[in-house]
Image 1 (cartoon, rainbow, N blue to C red):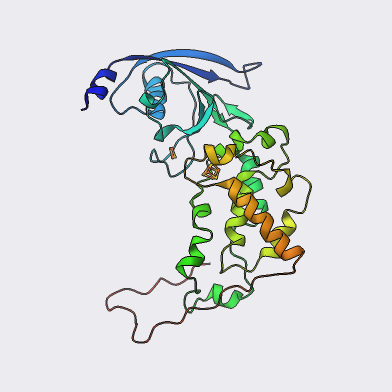
Image 2: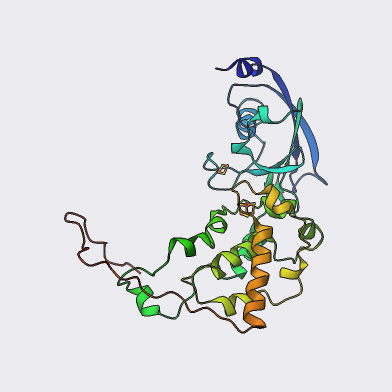
Amino acid sequence: MTEQAKGCQDKEMTFRIMRYDPDKDAKPYFQQYKIKLQHGMTILDALMHIKETQDPTLSYRKSCRMGICGSCAMQVNGFPRLTCQTQVTEISTDTIEVRPLANYPIIRDLVPDLGDFMARHESILPYIIREDHQEQNNPTGEYSQSPAELEEYLQFAYCIKCGSCLAACPTNATDRKFTGPQALAAAYRYAADSRDGGLAARLDTLDHPNSLFRCHYAGACSEACPKGVDPSLGIQLLKRKLFQKKILGRGQKPAGMAQTPAGIGRREGIPQAPEKTV
Ligand code: SF4
Ligand code: FES
C-alpha cells in the first residue's frame, strides 16, 4: 500500500446523497452519511457500503462494476461519472455529493429513467442495414473491411450507453426532443461503417428540427464520456455525411464479401455452429 493510500485508510468521509421516492416525497432532498474510507474504495463501493451498513432503502443502479455495462453513471459533485470507475480519493472534497444523472426523470433516489434515452438510440436505426438478406440469414463468409475502414467508426463503437453525455449536454437540458449526442454519434458510427448501406434511411430519421443542427458544439458530451467517445466530433462528421448525400448526391455502396485466401480452411477439431433455432 502506498503512503498516500495509507493516509486515506480510515479517513472519515461525508456523502451527501439525493433521495427521492415519488410515492412518498413531494420533491427530492439530500441525506448525509458518514463512512470510513477503505483503500481502493470507489464511489459505488461507498454507496454499497452505506446501503449494507446504514440504510438498506438507498436505491442506485449497477451491474458489472468494471466500467462496461454503463449502468452506474451518476452526478458526482455535479459531474457525470461512472461511479464504479471513480475512486473516492480522486474527489478532492471532504463531502461528496451524489445525485442521479442530470436531465433524466428520477425513478427513485439515484436511479434515472433511461427509457427515453434508449428510445432515441433506437430511433436512428442502430444496426447494419443491407439488402442482401439471403447472405445475412445464411452467411457464406465475411464482409470485407480494411483496418483503415474500421478506424473510421471504431471509437464511436465504444459507447456503452451510460447516458453521461446527455446529462452534460446543455442543448439536451433545454430541449428534451433533441436527438442527443449519444444517438447522433451512434448514427455516425453506422453511417461510417463500410459494410452499411442504410445512410438514406438513417438520415431520414434525423430529418426534423431537433436533430443534428440543434447541436451548438459545446463539447460537454465529449468531456463527460468515460469511454473516450467524442460525440461532438461524430455529430460534425455526420453533418458532412448529410451534405455529401443530400447536396452532392454521394451515396455509399456497402462492402462486398471478403475473398478467402487460398489454402485457408476450417481447422480440424473445431465444431460446427449449432443449428439455428429462430
Ligand atoms: S457516448 Fe460516451 S457518455 Fe454518451 S452514452 Fe456513450 S459511453 Fe456514455
Ligand atoms: S457498474 Fe457497470 S459500468 Fe459501472
